[in-house]
Image 1 (cartoon, rainbow, N blue to C red):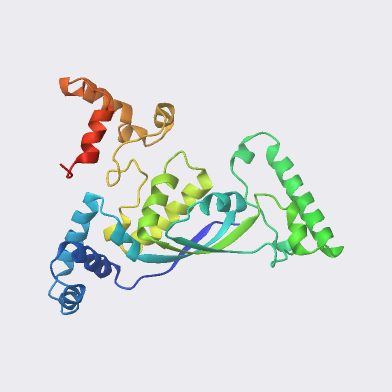
Image 2 (image 1 turned 90 degrees about the horizontal axis):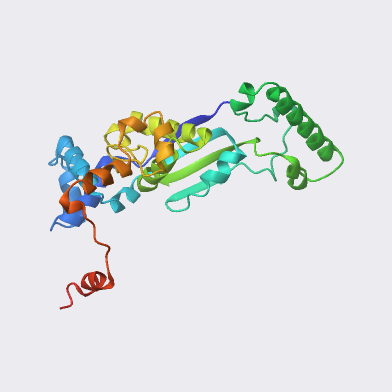
Length: 272
């Protein structure tokens, strides 16, 4: 079963919404006045785009929560879904139920990692096990075991479907983690397809969906050094240890540990 990602819908005129949200923070004008300017065409599309991109460079992320996307996702494994639902803020999931959906024998497919094809003889073992699980599951249903109990034999390889609503701030966070080479291949591929859909629809902000080492994110890798060395794009981005090494080569890099007195200065700042 192929993994499929569809951008079902997104907030109407997302760039204007972002511009309005950012201008509310930085302008003495009321939101109504800002939106009057947008609606009247007094703000050029290029101005809106450039203003948003400058704000994104600062890391001001809260307005991004006001731009929302809806995705349809199918053909992903339950192994992936257990990872995906760990994302909890700014995202909402509706997932195919194994309690209410009774899988017919000719419809019960499985997600198979390519690594099982590479290990001699293991793909046959995998397929044999999946067929046996299918047989036992169907037998359980025929014997009157409820689907909610028959599903106990189903493996993580069982495919599932989602409809997802997510805001752009959370999408950036998801991309930070799941586009990283250390993420499992399946969820990395799914998020890459989500990114592709947004880049096609709204390239002005879609290009910001990168792994956290991307030039529009942190710009460096903070994973273990061995993982960076093994990453196929690792040499394109510096590792944090390289940055620290450069810093240490200069006199200013003679770091002194922060003490309690230093932290009290932070605590007392503005209260003198």
